[in-house]
Length: 140
Image (cartoon, rainbow, N blue to C red; front, side, top):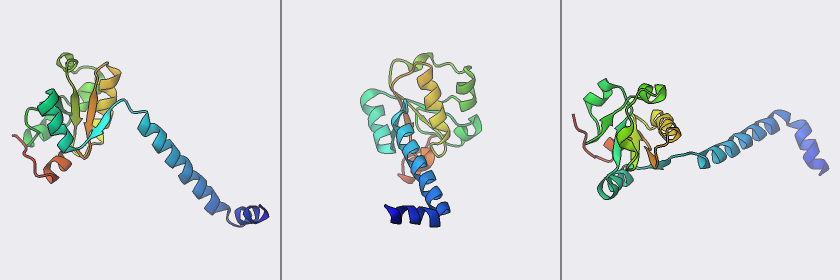
């Protein structure tokens, strides 16, 4: 025990860094389990669409959407979802999958959709980039 106290006294910055990383790790684990949506990959997305008729929501800008989007996706920009201006009436009856370029902005959209009573909600991890990396088609 005295060696531990001596180590802490000699390496205060190192110990503080360790504690900070530990706290960040625990927070990340806790916040990940409290999400109101589920992360899925492109393979899981195709299964959801084929088996459960999932609705796909592209939360990118209309310009990004028109440059290429997942087949049958509807464009509801993130700004509209966050402001409450988006028409979400058709999303209640089936699973909803949101995506963006890399899967980061769509996380915010998933939280908003869940807060507005839509369930179940899924986020495409990696977004369009993961979709293209799996050599899956985009529609224009």
